[in-house]
Image 1: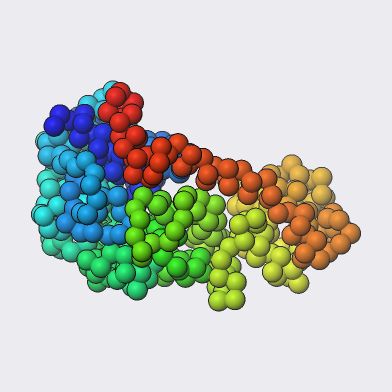
Image 2: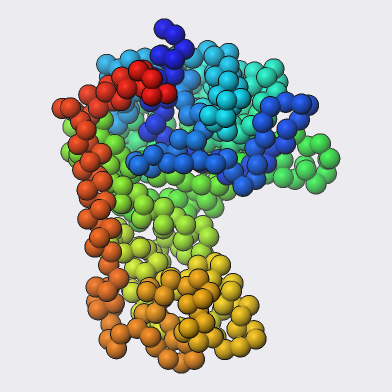
Length: 436
Ligand code: SF4
């Protein structure tokens, strides 16, 4: 099989992995090598279904000994299979990099022969790129659960970011949908990577040339909608992961129904809007200081798809509003719908010199059409005369967005000749005939 054919198969097989953002790593070009990774992140764009396409995003192989029910690459599926050699990946990366097609590599793999064997090949690829080809560009590699610890540590020494995919948000779903995967095998490498990062952080103050260890941190991915967990279950797990393993990011990947199985839900499209709401909730937890249990609870376990989570929270806590813009702390300001970090900072700075009017805050970047229902300026309220959750909810619900997303979700599979599997084959075909 020639290398372009392998590329078509293994880049297509990698597209279900959402966790390929590249931000947060700084790696300078050394020894007249090739490429830099910058702190502000490799530029990346997303396909309409939300997948990142700016890195060379491939699998080492899609030959898999496991049979996870939700996965296109599961051993029982009759799909085209291929495997790169480490040398082929290094060559492809360097050639694409030199042609400016990519700015880095996202390398994952199915489980080929055994977890350690697969991890060994991944590490071999990293070493080839870093040592032989002197490639200093961004590399995100997957750690294979169940692989020997020494291999995962070695990967951390060469990659910018490492991730271990949790995939399913509960042990019971893992048992049902991916019975060959073990929770402990997933958590162990996460802990190992966390410790490696912490160790490096300590050492860099003691030694000038402390060796790098995954400077872009670690991340993971959760599949949304393949199993019955609620948004509350997922966000609570996320919160815990950020706390326990110091993850940089948790990625959410709406379940794409590529297989049929009696343990899988009977759906026709990925839950894109749900995925989007989870990202918004995650953002509120990571950057705005919200707790999962403030946003959702056992009685309301899922996000309202018509409202963003911050607005939903504000409406559920309307007795704490309206908030006087001229008096609120920064922490309170950023909890107001329509006010983000930048506008909150501007408000704090500007009101040092004068009281802010409604006209003033319009100029400070506040999204007035949302914020006006939750604030007062100089004691005056600018929403409609009815200060009541249902009324405001009705004003703010994004009916258009829901309609649009529904159209998008349907169109995701409208190209299907007859089944999701045919869609994959058609997609592969188009790649094989020059789309790459
Ligand atoms: S281990 Fe499971 S999820 Fe990963 S490639 Fe194999 S079948 Fe797919």
